[in-house]
Amino acid sequence: MKKLLLIIMLLLCVAGCGQKKQDNGKLSVTASFYPIAEFTNAVGGDNVDVYTLVPDGVEPHDWEPSPRDFTRLGRSKLFFYNGMVESWAEKAITTLSDTNIKGVELGKGLYNINGNNDPHVWISPQKAIIETNRIVDALSQNDPKNADAYKKRGDEYCQKLKKLDADLKAIVKQSPKKKFVTSHAAFGHLAKDYGLEQLAIAGISPEAEPTPADMKNLVELVKKENVKFVFMETLTSPKLAQLIAKETGAEVLVLDPIEGLDEEGRKEKLTYIKLMEANIKNLAKALK
Figure 1: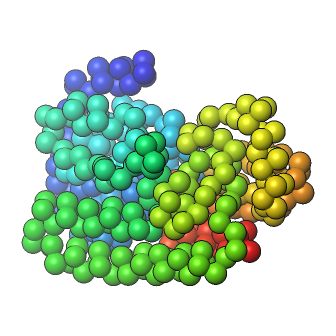
Figure 2: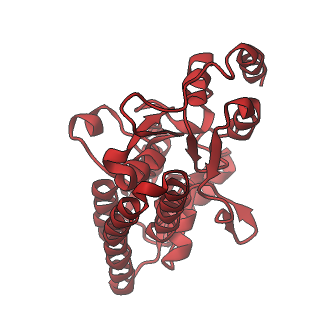
């Protein structure tokens, strides 16, 4: 919080210094982190210039922007963010109000799962479609001359998301198991939307450490449910997943919350679609 207050003070001399239009004539957009940028690039194509705030390989939940990041944000016409993940976003928009930047909370109204808020809406293809369509609407409103292009690209991308949706439904329908174990509770929306149940080692934030009692109960549950695979992630430590696997005889697989690309993902030029295809493949294996 102290860091954020310092940044806000520094911004008093930053707001108004940014340029709204790029020299290349493209609509300037800032995306908070990887999946938001991925959706924006898919819709915007050659008509937008997208800058991603959270760097690749960095877990976004605890990331905070630097003064330089705020300066770059102030030069954008639109700021797309998921919501809840970016605790600093609303204050940033308020602070940069003199630059006329428009913030768009893509996950607004989508977080609730049985009375609890979970920000990881993008990991469900059904909600990724909603976020993508919200990007189409925002880009079209702010760049109406290219609205048809945004609509066309948005529809094409949503078709890919609908294919993921259909694949997930098919996997779940034919799978005898409906429970899966993850290192942190990032898959609540996927579980809810497709009739599954996640058993999470840690909470919604990857920083939330389970208690010894939590670990003991989960080990017992994994054994009781005859779970054969425990899922780890790419941007957080695999130790908890490996420990549960060791205690239960299960194997470890990757289920990526797609919060960002690691070094290997960057080299392989992975995309949200490819990562979700890999997730679906591993889920199918774990639910047998």
